[in-house]
Length: 192
Ligand SMILES: [Zn+2]
Ligand SMILES: [Zn+2]
Image (cartoon, rainbow, N blue to C red; front, side, top):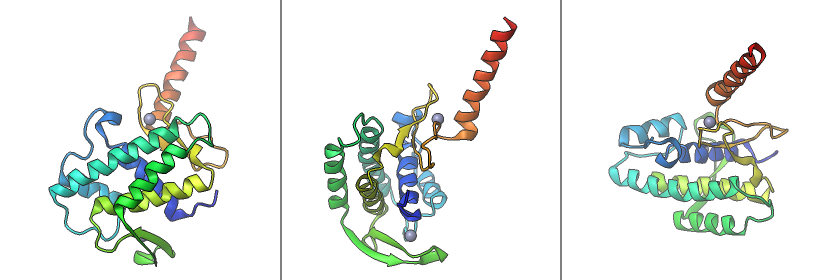
């Protein structure tokens, strides 16, 4: 797949943002400004000025829109059936406003930022995650969005593996947990 590293990183960011929501993880993962600030630094999001409570509210709103789009893509039965997701992505990008520009900040290779310089964090995320989703759809790769296969996990995932073999949101946590459970079950069955 040739979406480009920055597009892939924006898509991972969108999935991680949605995975902070209470509907996905049971509790609010972005409950205060400290949590929002650590999300920003963990994702290495650039050009973020001081964060306020209104940023938190706005990010929650963008997260809800991304959650609806990603859930729709994860549940796609027919890959060609992206009309409604396309409409939602267009609305997200239009609302955010964009100023595409080339940049090589902080030692990253040349890539395109879509958010308008000086944009608040929520518009930044809406513009760049929205454009990354637009690239994913135009590449015909919408089925890369999926859900973790662990039965008690509601996290979304994006699968960039060549053979689309990714099943868990995180191999070290959910993947490992399911493998251990399956191993124990086999042991019990053979002992039984
Ligand atoms: Zn950048
Ligand atoms: Zn999981």
